[in-house]
Image (cartoon, rainbow, N blue to C red; front, side, top):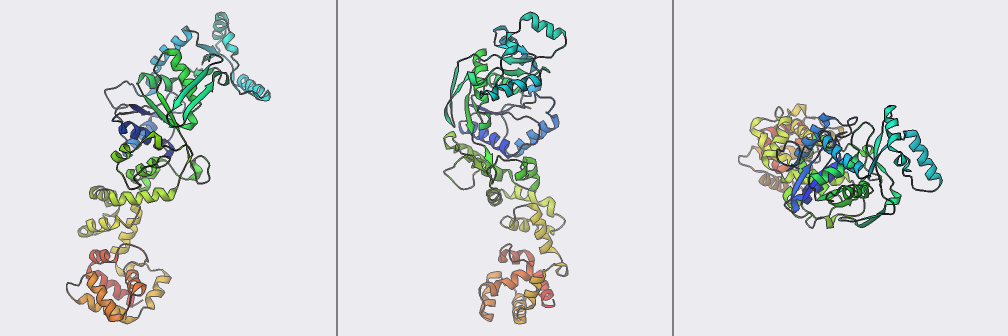
Length: 467
């Protein structure tokens, strides 16, 4: 099995594209197959080389290396469509020679008029085929006058194009509803329908898994490949991702570029687990590494209804990733942000403490500031100050006395404090948490005690007593 991801470098990879890449990667690896990357930059007016390189970096960061594609010596490249124009020319010539392609000189305004006329008659808008009637002499005359021509594929009438979509099931289209379509633009560049299909065949792609917005492209591409006698891959079209409002996911729903999410601090593993379940069900609901995601991936588990983007679920998988990533990766993620805020001797303990406390590096910076600032620099809200001022002085004094005892660990200290003051629940724990952090939430108190040490804890209690 060979699958492919074939993006156009006209912008950053967003969640929709990333899911397509991930599903093709998982499909290939579920069958010990090959995942191919092809850069579809045939439209020179919209494609940027810098974006293509960023696209490759995003895929590698996401944990989706390709076995064939840019940078791979072996294979059936080149893998940039802009470098394949000579290949496309050979197939253009073949189609012209068998009467399945012809030059079209119709202007944009003429095509618009045709469309309006057909819609007025209640017919599906499609090209009328008028340039197909031009003689060789008329074509030569137009070219001599400097008129530019696109190249259209001649769609045979009264044909039925059938294929078994491995996601949506059996599909059927009438050629009479399609009409002749452009396969080469008037500037000589290859049109999407054409180069996309040719490259899939020549690169021996066996399975094309893409969004259902490409479903109507498929009969056109099948007709092209049939006319040229090339192999036709299996096609599967998955439902698109929609926002919480049910509309197709777009910029108005938030920032969804992989670059933006990476810079925000998301883990690749979080995105893998979230996207893999966005329109695909897994029997195992727990966090899975990329190999397990591939082993349990199946097109039969792809849903036919739109997948709804849910930011809370993405955040859930970010938290799960934090609990499962290696210590080295966690250190690499946090250390640059906190190296000037946390004492070296406490760095590793602090980083491990953050594993179950935060979601993003900026939150670790906030906690580092809270935990390692001088007590007089600790910022309490008015609400917290008022709470601490109302705490019975006996609570603070008893706590200080217990801290003076050597070898007192947290569990022993809390038990003794409870027995001496007859307190429990929030009355026992809230003053202590607030005096140490100024917050109602945060890491386990036992771990905070271990990290801060008795001297720092006593310092904060004494400071709070004098508020």
